[in-house]
Image (cartoon, rainbow, N blue to C red):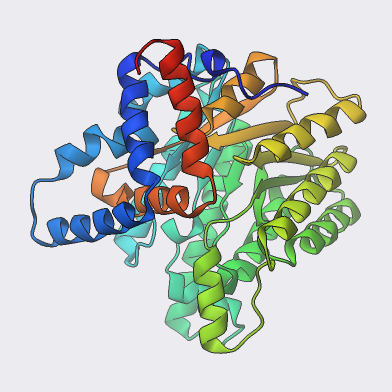
Length: 388
């Protein structure tokens, strides 16, 4: 076990100015009321075309994002690498609907794969399926509804985009993390991802699926997926997360009268998450895992499972990952003693990345204790540096 209380290690990459900005941001995010008011004011400002970009880019964008371009993000990558923390560059543009925008996202993600191949500090490339596919189309496929001729052609372009990125990852030996989405489009995504695994995961782990463990069926999904991979002689890459759409999932289930796909409480989600860690480590001969968690207990559990199996701290099949700007006490304390750690570093045009930033602020204000825990640690370090 390691300690996550060492704030000198946790915040060693941050200047005093960075730390003070983080203190201000998390103080604001600690109030759900202020976050909601801020969201409304932002929507009004953008609707009126008020010049708010500079304010966003200098505050919340700077804290949670690498930059508007890959080149702008380079300084963050170098800063993290000085402390043995790697970077996962995430082009955080999503929800596009027309083919021109979807193709533009594809080209940008392909560029991140090529960039990762040249960069020893980038262990994975990543993409969000709704950055390359129209949501309504995925939903129709998920519901097994008949597609018309035009939709069939459109869906084939979606599959081709997935394949183009996974093929490039295979050619350049860059693993590809494919994010999870809402439950009512996830089956369609899983089918495409498993098809990519059959093509590219025969000898090495290139294609990674993502499991959101707030769903009560994902642990069993992982068991079946690992059995499927073993029967096919494949490697199975998986990113574990708790999930990003909990409230939306519950509201939709209630509204449409179907069984809620989420776990009944946080304890059940925590239990499934840790059980998934154990399942991955128990199948480490065919599984590679990226444990995306801001939960201290789960990261300690990952460490304990690695120790129990006699795995080296730097085993390349196992990574822990956290978002840029959050849980530095986990990231930097783990990397400090030799575990593989990466930060998700979103980038993209400020206003295109805004949906991501809004989710970050809302999650920090709604997750019990998240912002207050960050604040306690930031204040501890500010006191150590005599800034407070």
